[in-house]
Image 1 (cartoon, rainbow, N blue to C red):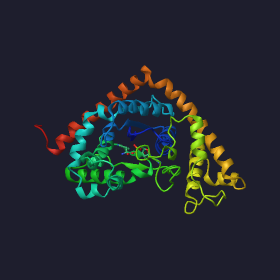
Image 2: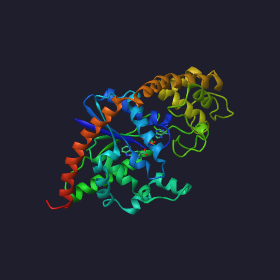
Image 3: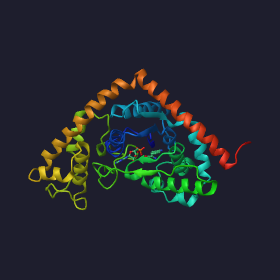
Image 4: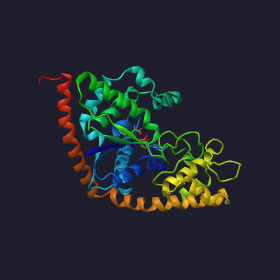
Length: 332
Ligand code: AMP
Ligand code: TRP
């Protein structure tokens, strides 16, 4: 059986970008790949690479866990857990830090972007983050890792690290393949379509839609999304970046073809198009929010997380015991 592994950091509120680039893809894969096992986690250790308010962090961790299920993941088929509840993640992360070079980490664009902004002091864990991310993946011998486009580089480094380990110590870790969606892999900011929609880096809340926004807010944000003065509905990411992003969102949320949508609206105008898009998003998010509300305080969610922790832990414990033996650590 093949295993799929992926995670989301509990920094800021989950956005429509996370939904279309990652969560929706997990749900689709789960429906499509029946013979696959899904390990999904909340990457809470990754969140503290930048300062977090403890009470808010704890709330967001559960928010994400509940959101995975509310978005349609099958709770019977998903091993859902918190990264921080499996100590072997960090243990392997350290071993992998010892198998990745400074130069490789320095080339990571996510890290370079954060440095360029220099919002706060840069922690050493932000720098070594890709080693922990690699551990999150190869500890469980993931075959596939569904992520948005922004994580492609981290996945390539994960493959490099896994191969390096295997070459030196003998075949041990599965080398994972990234799975990046064809549409929706990079949803852009609604006010600044040059940068990706992000829950942690965006100062202007009008630039992103969170999965918790109420219907009126969603419609308002779409109506005020930046477009252009060309005024014609066509898919032209070069000259009509804002509109191309809205078309991508429309296609991705309704599972339609971009060109099919262009065709439907080619004689229409931005106002009507935006109204319909707002409605399409609300239609998808409202039932998700309702499910999330019921789950968040439930014992059911706790039970799912306990079960997930136990299954992941069992695998991690055995793999790590073997890994230390391979590396020559400990007594036997
Ligand atoms: P993060 O929020 O950085 O923890 O990302 C969690 C997942 O959501 C990863 O698979 C990202 O690639 C994906 N993701 C984040 N932002 C976007 C975006 N704007 N468009 C598409 N996918 C995204
Ligand atoms: N680094 C990812 C992000 O910022 C989140 C993440 C952490 C992840 N560990 C992972 C994604 C393992 C996939 C697999 O989006």
